[in-house]
Image (cartoon, rainbow, N blue to C red; front, side, top):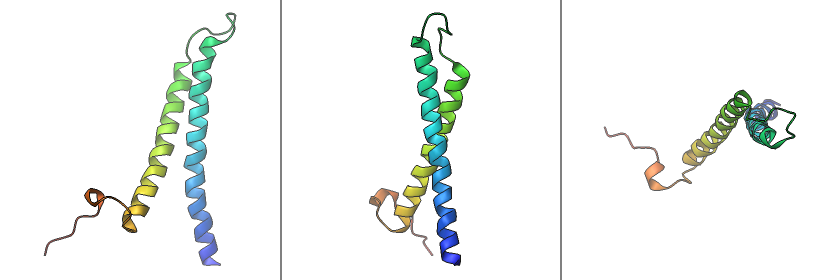
Length: 89
């Protein structure tokens, strides 16, 4: 039972940043395409929404990328220059 709960928490730790990155991408897309809408609406980029979208997208992608990198590093799947440095005694 404990193993199932740990896997559930691990999946949540990947789903939440993934959802944030998805929302950030959609917010940036909406802010950019709002510029090309009808003339009676707001004819310029919504900079606040664009900045929030970029921060959410970058944070989500960085978290998932770091998760994958450190998992692959632990399993020794990375290139030699990214492998953990061996301690000299």
